[in-house]
Image (cartoon, rainbow, N blue to C red):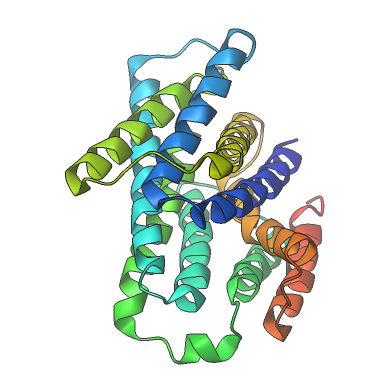
Length: 280
């Protein structure tokens, strides 16, 4: 069950990112992030009477910490993308986000079989390949200065997964309220300090709302995956396969052409999922 939930969260994460990317073409990043997260929080509050659970103050703190990590990653990620180095930032961030929960999971006692270990390694390779929009030559030409913020953003995203995993198994979706409240607060604080507008064009609003609800749904699916019997090293890397969903949607909807590395990445991701889900 944990594997299925994590994989589904990856699909929904990727779709939400795709819609958020479309919205960012019409509105400022701060408007997209703040309003999409507010829409997600509203949807969560509607579901909480059925999917919530008892939490302690410690669990709420873990949730809030996860929210701060996630929003920090978003801010660094979008700021770095603004520098025009997407071909370097995207794969570096995605692989780092996947590697963090794997490293934490293994170091805290996760024991995975040989097939799953090979699958995890293949998944990391797949994430990098799928995220390279301009071919492998862009990575070879990368400068260290461009890698540092991408590594920071990826570490923050990975930490989001790790911190959510720390919340209680019987808490339901309640920790996400603290996560999203902390995240929105940080985004509003930064937007206010930078004097950035949070008012999007009317045409972008539906995309922002659906993206926010999708992102919250993906968060909920991942949190439920951590509460089911399973290992963080596996659920974390499966949830981090979200670039696959984004790339497939971009190809299907926007007719973007896949480079050779991305095609190899999609096939590698499929092989990785098969190996990770092999019993034993």
